Length: 270
Image (tube, rainbow, N blue to C red):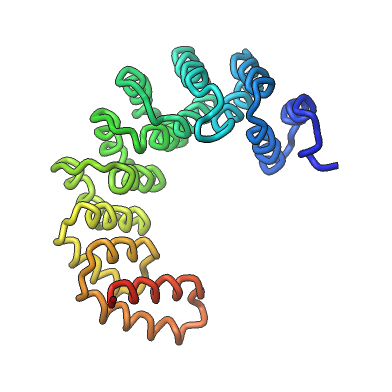
C-alpha cells in the first residue's frame, strides 16, 4: 500500500525514523499535499519541539503546506520568526531559511533585518539558504545583502545571489548594475551567465560584447539565450548560426540544447 493511503499520523511516525533523504522528502511531499488543519497542527507542534529532528520536520512540512494561498500562512511566518529569535543549530536555520523562502511575499522590514543578521555566518549552507530567503523580496536591505553575497567566496552563493539581483529583482539602479558587472568575468560559468542575463534585463547594451565572446567560445549554457532574446539584437544571428552548424556535427551535444538554440535563432530572425 502506497504512502498516499497511509494515515497522516503514520507518515509523521515514519519521518522520525527515515534513513534516506529520498524517503524523507517523499513523506514530506505527501503531507504537504494534505493541506488540512490536522496536518498543520501536528506540524506546528513538531516545529516547536525541543528536539531538532522533530523541529525540522515541522518546519519542512509547513513550508509548502497547500498553495495559493498556503494554509494558515501568517501563522507559519510568525512561528518561523519566533524560532529565529531563539538559539538554533545550523540544520534548523537551514530549514527555516528555506521555509521562509517559500513564504516571503510580504516580509516586513523588521523581518528582513532579522534575517540579514546571518549574512556573515561562517557556515556556507546558512549563507546559501539565506540568499534563498531574501531573494525576490523588494526591500533595499534585502537587495543590499544579496549584492554583498554576490561577492561570496562560495560559487553557489554567488550564483544564487546574482540570480536574485539580476532576475528576481525588478529594481534597476547603479548599485545593482555595478554588482552585475562585477560578476561578468566570474570564473564560475553559471554565475557569469546570470550576470549577463541580469544586465540584459536592464538593457545594458554594453553586455553585447560579452555575449558575443561567449558565443564565439561555444562553451555557454541556455541562460545566454534568455539574454539574447531580451536584447533582440540581430548581430547575434551569425554567431548562433555558426554554433548550430558546429553542434550538428558534435555527437556529444545534447539534443535539447540544439532545440533551444534553434528556438532562440528563430525568435531573433523573426
